[in-house]
Image 1 (tube, helix red, strand yellow):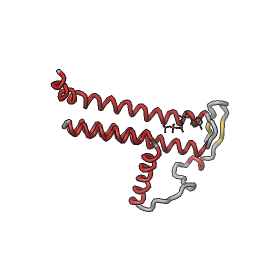
Image 2 (cartoon, rainbow, N blue to C red):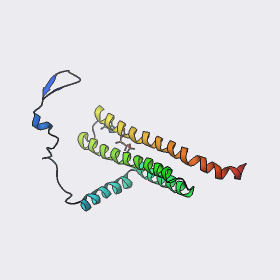
Image 3 (cartoon, protein in one colour):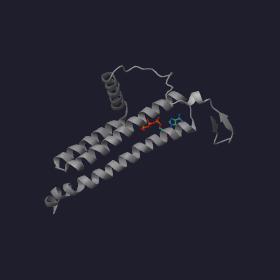
Image 4 (cartoon, rainbow, N blue to C red):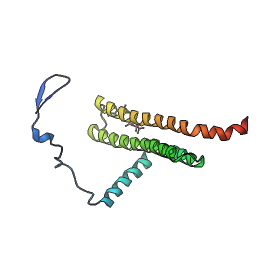
Length: 154
Ligand SMILES: Nc1ncnc2c1ncn2[C@@H]1O[C@H](COP(=O)(O)OP(=O)(O)OP(=O)(O)O)[C@@H](O)[C@H]1O
């Protein structure tokens, strides 16, 4: 197979065998069953919670938004949308953490423009999902909250 370098526009010949998507000869098979897989996944969540300040902030803010939605007796579908958007933010944060680790593993403490792009884009994904989550929560939580608070002030 022939690949073309964007920069130099030169053709590079790559053996077909190297591109096989099922070739995982370099990977380890550690998790022997589903329960072990869940344990490793939970270790990932625990690591992110322990080390990532933003992850902890998202957990607290997300829990608050879901609790408020329950307290305001939002419709099940509205509650589901809030849970979904909060879950997406936490998922993005976990992917961001994983990607940062892989980048650091690859370039270590050296500056690389591609490392910067990878980390900036991963952080941008978290930011976008968080902004969407806040907008969704505002749309769903503010009207019923206003209904309750309005008589107290006016
Ligand atoms: N090896 C590198 N080469 C070039 N730029 C880098 C490199 N490492 C980090 N950066 C730049 O520094 C920024 C912060 O990187 P860092 O690894 O400290 O993430 P972080 O502050 O922990 O991010 P987050 O808050 O999302 O966890 C990156 O978005 C990137 O712009």
